[in-house]
Amino acid sequence: MGETAAFDSISLTAQVVLLGVADLAADGETPIQTHTVRRHCTRRLENADTAVVGTITEADVIRSLYRLEDVGLVEEHEPSSVSPIGKGRPAYSLAVSVDAVYDGVDDSLLEGAAD
Image (cartoon, rainbow, N blue to C red; front, side, top):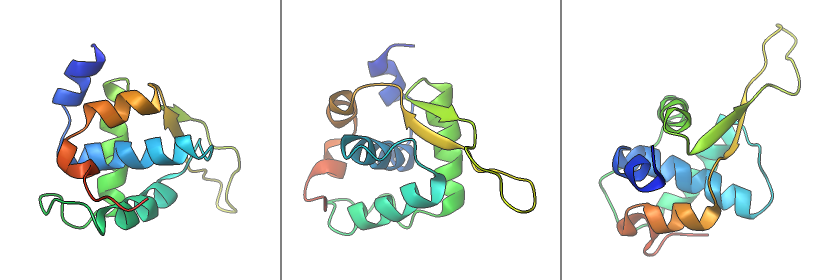
């Protein structure tokens, strides 16, 4: 699937999550776990010029990351550490360039967004 088709096939919520991963990648902070992506997305949406998305939950982030991985926009990395109960959280990074994300997402998500 080409990049343009991939962007056309994802929801606004997934686009917000993708923007979060792109912002964090631009700052050299990826691979990144879901809770950090959610925190960043919440801050980013505070001043964004859209009310369509609403509140982003961690479940929204997880579902979006799975979808974004399916269409080839992010990559999942195996957990680098394991919790005391034997589970690890996967981390994610971009599979496309940061510029491709900024060019491909809905413009209303970029206008007035907090950095």
